[in-house]
Image (cartoon, rainbow over all chains, first blue to last red; front, side):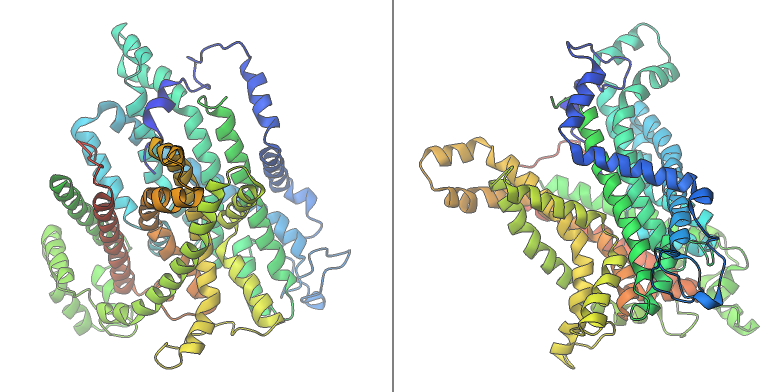
Length: 302
Length: 317
């Protein structure tokens, strides 16, 4: 991912920044007007919020213990007592899907935060100081990007050992170069702006320039990227767990649940329906919400 | 242009060098004696000594690295702990299966995405455009392993039309080969098709609003001629780049797809290697993947420059 449309995007001021020019219409009113044009994005955002509520409220929402096995209830079709059926160990599938949302959300959000925590400062410094340091950073990110995301994650899990924490670290590290490149590109475009040059002329130091002038003005672009990165990270966690390289049984992860479901497609298809549907709906909602957010925050589009 | 290509090639070599450093360091980050790591836990003292000898594990680390790269360039990536066969041989045996799978997937993706994307761009904001955008968004969002499971459930378990798993080489039985490759290729191709469709649509919209298209229209050329003779040729150039950039996703997708459909290819090899802690195999496979990725992207850049001679990139890295 290279710098998105450097020139015009950056010269029109990013609206989250402190330099946002006041237009006739208020910023909130404009955002609301644009949102109303995109009901699908609003629906996506609502569903994402619902998943957040489910993830946080899992202990209260799930009717049963997600790891409690019951030999009398092995692979029972959905009923009122078990709306998503039960799995091969007689555990309540609904409770497992509910708890699984917690694991997915946690892995997705933490992995992206990790990638941002490493990538944004590196990209910021590289783009700000340029020169040799920048060249060095760019060659490193090139090499980093030479490893396909999943292969890098698999390699890292091999070294670190399979667990939720290590899968999250591996996904975060794998996603980092994208953040380095994006931040660097945005900084390269923003640092030439008049207000940055003006602040420099007034004697602002490097740190102040970065913290007060650059970061606030690239923040909304980073926010949009975060919204579209989280679903990718969620799918990556599910894939690693599906392959047996992430969350280990009996913990309820959507990926491990699908792995178990594979053996019972004939006798217990409901085991495969719900965890996969949950990943699909959550990812789709994130993408819809991300599209909407891009639209709302993009100053080019009125 | 020549200067650009040389520049680009030099950068690729540097990238490969750094990538090989990363792989080399990665294996040494595994706790324990590196000789034990490379030889496997059931190796005897003689085996360990042979490994130490081959990779010079008593030498300074830079010397070890140079020797390892030297062997790798000549195609010697060590041997698998489990099978004792050379890593290069193992990979060479598995790779054609994955390449076949990838080619089918690309064929399916291109066959669906480009016509759909072009049509969506030509009939912008029509019902067709909205529907293809929605399908494309679903295609990006659907986890490929769930799609695979659902396909097996429907076409193999419920309808019994296609075998759920396995692989038959095409020279043994072409029909059985295609039957078993069909679902995996669709699963692998879906995400690619979704991305390609979006890119094709955007690229075509941009081209269709260009001056020379307006001129062609003003001359009185029919819509069809404008699209086919003028727009597509230029509109599809960026799509070539996307194909190159998507190769990483394709390899990752192959790992998952082969796992679901029990296709004995490169992707399944990686997962097996990880589970059996076959470090030399993991190391070799990761290095080969990274090299392939760099080379393909270099080729894409070259073809891009050749396809569109207007591109000059002064100073842009």
